[in-house]
Image 1 (tube, rainbow, N blue to C red):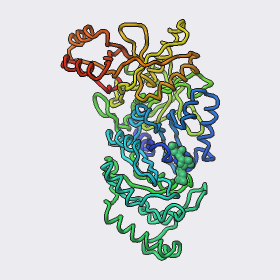
Image 2: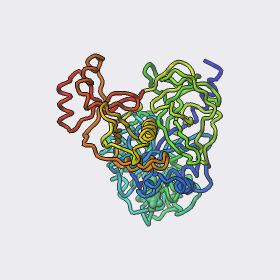
Image 3: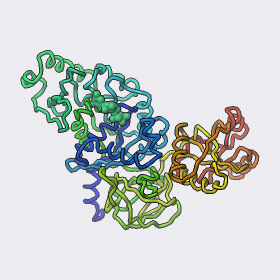
Image 4: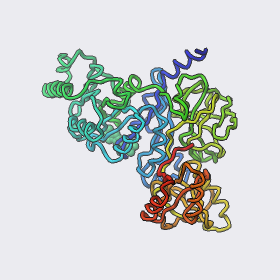
Length: 531
Ligand code: GDP
C-alpha cells in the first residue's frame, strides 16, 4: 500500500477509455458529436465538424479527406458525464487506414460498435470487430438509424450473433421503425423512452413497472403495446441474460437501438458505458502485467500525428497512460534510449480544445510534443524500464519509389520521409543498392495523402512511381551469422526501415516463396511488434 492508493483507486474507477468502431456512414461521427453533447463538453452538436471545417480550410492536405469524404485523422476526445471521465479515441473507418486503427485499439479498454439498422454488419464492421477480438476488447453495440426503414430487430441480432460469433442481449427494444418509430423499451431499466424527432435534449424515459404496466397502454397504441410485449418476451426467451463478466471478457454484447442524429438512445448508451464498460485494464509488458493502480507512472506511444495545429509545425506523440499519477513537469524514462525526458508540456485532449495536462491517470491519453525522439511502440516509465507489448506494425502491401521533382532537394526529402515513417504514416525503406527511397503503405490511397503532406508540410513536389515490387518482409533469425549470410547473399533485395531493421523486398510471389524455401533459418515477418 502507498498513500496514493485511495486517489488512484478513485480516479481509475471513474475512467472509461473507448473507441467507436463502424463501417463508414453508419453514424460514427454523428454519435461522437451527440456523446460529446451529452457529456457537456461542447455546447452544440456539430461543433466537432465545424471545428474540423476550420481546420480543413487552413490545411491543404486535408483536401484529400474532404474530397473523399473520409476521416483520415484520428483524435482523442475527453469529456465528463455524471462524475465519470470518458476518453473517446477516434478510429478512421476507411480500410486504407487499418494500421492506425489497430494501434488505436491497443489503447482502449472497450469499444462501441455502431451498426446501420438497414444494413447490418458490413465489411469494415467485421474487420474492426476482429481487431477488437484479438485483444478481447468488450463491445457495446448501438444499432443506429431506427428512424429509417430498417431490418427486423431479430434479424439484426441474429446476424451479429452468427457472423461475429458473439452472444448478444438486447439492452433496449425498438417500438416500430422508420416513420412509425415510437421509441424504445429500456429492458435494463424497465423504462419506456418515447421518440421525439429532432430534439437536442436527453430524452427522458417514463418509469414503468414491468411490461404489464397499464402505463404502457396509455402511451402506446394497442397494437404497438401488444407487439412490444410479444417481442420482448420472445427476445428474453431466445437470448442470454446480460452477464457482466461475459461482456467484460468480450463474449457478449449488450445491444442498444437508437437514432444518433435525433439524439435518441444516446443517453442510454452513455449510461451503459458508465455502468458496464471496464475501467482501465492491466496492460501487458515483456516482463509482467502493469496494474492501473500502481503508483509509478507508465505508458506507451500508440500514435504520432503531425500538424494537428497548422499554426505550429508540431508533431504529437499520443501516450496511453497505464499506471500512476501523472503530473506536469515530472521526469519519465524513455525506455528505448534510457534517456530521461522532462514532461512539462504534455497536452490533454478535451473536446473543446487542447489543454495543458496538469495531471492524468491510467486510461488517459496525453499528447507529448515530439521532435522525433518518440516513436510508435515506445514505452515511458517513472520506475523500472517496462516495455509494453502488443502494438503492431504491418508490412506494407503497396510499394512505390519516390523522388523529388527537384533533384537538389533529395536530402530534404529524406528528412521528410524519415519523419513520416516515425509517425507511422508509411514505411520508408532504403535499399542497400541505389539511392532511391521506397515507400510502403498498407492502403494505396495513402500515397496520395503522403504526396499532399510532403508538398504542404515540407514544401516539396514529389512523384510516386511503381517499382515492380510485390511484398516487403522483415527478416530475422535466431542465429546472427546466418542472418548476415542471408543479407549478404540477397543484397540486391535488401533494404532497411527507419529503425535500421532489415527488410526483404520480393519482386513477385515466386521470389518470396523461393527465398523462404531456400532459407528455412530466416523468419519472414508480415507484422512486427514495435519496440
Ligand atoms: P460515419 O461515416 O460513420 O462517421 O457517419 P456519419 O455520422 O457521418 O453519418 C452518415 C450519414 O448518416 C449522415 O448523413 C448522417 O446525418 C446520417 N445519420 C447518422 N445517424 C442517423 C440517424 O440516426 N438517422 C438517420 N436517418 N440518419 C443518420
